[in-house]
Each structure stands twice: as C-alpha cells, then as structure tokens.
Amino acid sequence: MTDPEAVAPEARRARLIVCSTCRHPDGSPVDAQGLTGGQRLLNAVTAAGEGTAGLEIVEQACLWACSDHCTVYLSEAGKPAYLAGRFTPTAEAATALIDFARRYVDSPQGVVPYRDWPEGVKGHFIARLPAQES
Image 1 (spheres, rainbow, N blue to C red):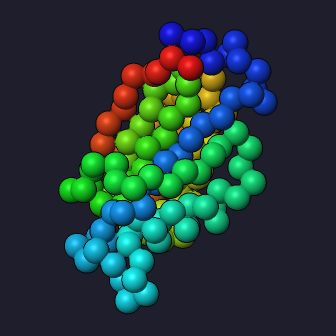
Image 2: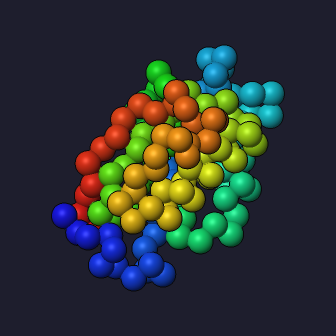
C-alpha cells in the first residue's frame, strides 16, 4: 500500500464522485425542472466545495447503488474509500458532505473520527472500502 504521507501534500487529490443519475428520495426519476436527484446533489456539492484544496468533485453516471439514492463515493490513493447514500439533494446535505471530505483530505490516513463527523453524514455510509494503490 502506498504511504499517503510519502506523497507531497500539494500532489494529493481526493475525489468526491457524485452519481448524477440517482432518483429523488421520493422515488421520482426527475423533478419538475427535469433534473435527477443526483444532478441536484451534484450541483449543490459543486457549489459547496468550490475552492476546496485537495478535492476534485466528479460526476459519474450510476454508481450502482440505486436503492440508496443520491449516492457519493469519496476516495484518495492510499486511503480507505467511502460509499454513502440516502441523501436529500439539498445545500445542507452538500455542506455536510464537503465538511466530511475536507476532514478526510486533511487526515493522513483517511480516517475521520466519528466525533468529528458532521451530523448530515451520520447514518448515510454504505461501505468503507480498502485503500487502493496509487
């Protein structure tokens, strides 16, 4: 496994991948404006994360977690990755996700103590995945 501390901090980059095809929490595929829940969440996360050092926000069509609408995947080489879902596509959810992502980016091992989790992410994690080589 790659030691994350061996990589210069300015070279490290975490990715917060947002599923753009997720349905809305009420089950509807699109809203009155024709946007999916995932597109709404992506827009909110992009706005909340603007200027966040070390974090890239990426759109992905379908993360295959359809029963857990509005799903995101957070990863960085050498750190465990997190899959989370069941979010409401709001600014509040996006702010909580970005807050968690910032703490993840700042953690050399990718571990954010539970006491530091924003309330808006608690109960939303689906899986913690092993670190990948860079």
